[in-house]
Length: 300
Image (cartoon, rainbow, N blue to C red; front, side, top):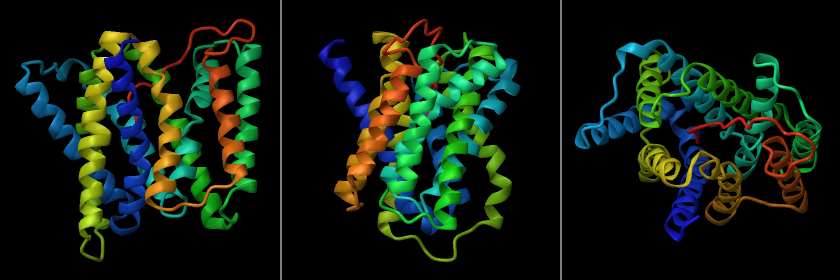
């Protein structure tokens, strides 16, 4: 990987890791529905402006149904679940739980595509389960009902990403990444819009909240997707998906540095187990025959 691509990978990881920080700041004030509507709408409009400016606007009508499905399953639903979880979880814990996405991708691929759970993937799934158990049982937050529900919401969001990854592989494998990102964001915005009047915040957001919304939409979504496209084109999809391993680490760093979130030895132990499980599940560290990797594609 060239220095330019390595820099782009690190910046992309920092931006996607930062999405949990921005949600942690804005979600308690705006609520998940309004926050995510603003995120996907602003990001979609920014990507639309980019596509028009570069004369690369992809066709929408021939594939509008798959775009709608991906908009719901890969954006609207997981974004809502994860932002709701950040009301009660730290940004670092939410980022670490989101790293289970490749594990769910392997399970969905096994159930949907009939892909065999190889020894490596099975070991990875068991390690991932152990990592989540360590994080939740020994982490810095007490296991209260709101925390437990928030953990479940985070894991359901990761499962939704896994379903979206397999759906995209089956139905939209040859679709340009820009089309997937652009129209999934706009479709997600359209799906969530009717719920916005029912979920308006009761207080005027502060400058920090407004800045977090703009950073989440423009930097961690629109700009991050453009970086991801460039990495795919220059370095290939396999190297581009290394962001899956790096963005949770940045989420932990941002939460600790900027929000002063507590970290314990168990936090690092749980993250280490999940990182090892990702390596086994995706085949980065082979253990027996790994099969074809499932890429989660663009996401936070």
